[in-house]
Image (cartoon, rainbow, N blue to C red; front, side, top):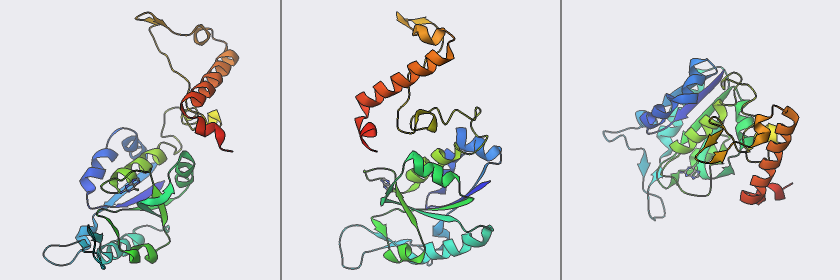
Length: 232
Ligand code: 6GU
């Protein structure tokens, strides 16, 4: 069982996604537990401020260290295992299917979702963080990134997807060598608006079908993502 502790100022936003589809099924199966924590609950004063103006001036606000430290210290002892600590930030290492596989092997993951222009640097220094970004663009906060990561991780846990092999066969999955995007899929009807299902897929020759799919995956990758073929 993988335990997620997600620290966010918008727990309802995170909750709404985790209670749908695969993330929900993963929890119902007991493969994962989600624990959401609002670090505003740990902020002081009538306004419970979690942000403040940056020392040195400049635009935007900075996440204060105290509520985050208090919340983390409250959450850490809630389970036996020391969590793998993930800081969601566009400054982090790029998230990939390989990183999802790494995280899926952990027993416990704590994710801190930032808002505002940045984190007080003391938050970074307080713990050993795995800083992760989901791409080179700026989101308004770490929540959507945390959800992207959670979704990509929980679907890799044993028994979550109906067919154990199905994650392997996907784009970036192990079945295609981890470096190809997927081949085309077809279902019934065999002809739709003049477009037919390729004969080979109807042939029942598993060897020929596997060969066709690999060819198609290579062709698609070369056309759409030649960068995936370059590296290595
Ligand atoms: Cl992890 N956070 C934010 N705020 N923006 C991002 C991101 C994370 N990854 C890409 N853009």
